[in-house]
Picture 1 (cartoon, rainbow, N blue to C red):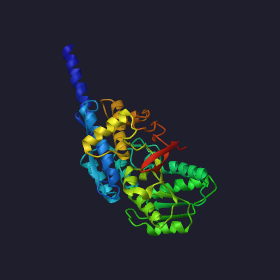
Picture 2 (tube, rainbow, N blue to C red):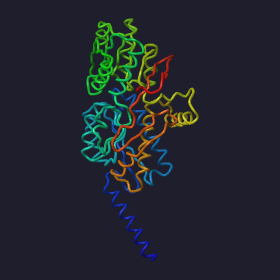
Picture 3 (spheres, rainbow, N blue to C red):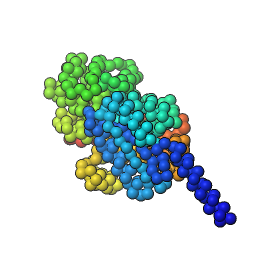
Picture 4 (cartoon, rainbow, N blue to C red):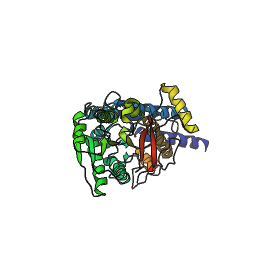
Length: 386
């Protein structure tokens, strides 16, 4: 009987190992994860802290024994916010590194170029920094998103701002790509619900540094609210140009411009800027005990203060770990998907939303919060936009 049990145990271990070996990126000892970031391009200010936050959470998990005894290994490729480089990075992570899943790929243009390759290769495409509808809809077993889509939260934000503050001529400055077009759809939908349209809109090419002609055009249209489909650098450039020419128009930026770097680099020029927050910025002043401890550990590790992108990277890695734990020792793509579809979280020490997924809905959150830069820091103005 003992011999039979031993043989059965050996057979079970062998079967488990074989099943794991059949799943790309999963071995008896590790799980390989891939991520495509901008570490050298125009949004490296976002990509670098996202990477650092993910690595911090992964190293914590590995120090505690990993996930069911497997260590996590994150391979990060730099696409420089360039879709062509992103495609090369995706192919490398699929073919050479054999990534089990992709986490937090950065930037809508890169995500739109790489997502089809990743999904066609049968790899999980998880929580990209591109709240584009196609990252979660139609429902696909490999696609999950936790960031509220641009269309939804910008529709709600613009409608709220116009109703509350009585703006008469709303305008749009947008990046001329998928990101900007998604924001435009949300802005136009919000105004349409109020029986209005855009008074003016103007675009800029990705990576542009001079927005003087665009700002002059918007001023000439007598806009009293300018919605910005910009990232950090372009947000600062737009507000600085407006202030330089003496135009004190209100501006509202998407979550892509909600970052401490915006007020740290923009200074007085960005005072009063409105923005949409997915997760509150982790300021040390007023932090709860758990957040203060996390900030101290982040500082000790990296020698700098964390920002909201660090927190989002950390949270993304944590969500993966939760789902992988729930999937069990026999980790496969199908088991992971089933675990994700049951996943439900509560608000954590970051003040994150409550994420909920289901077989019919792979978008974990549909809400954002309105914020404003006051006295050199972001202040949350209220609870979730609906």
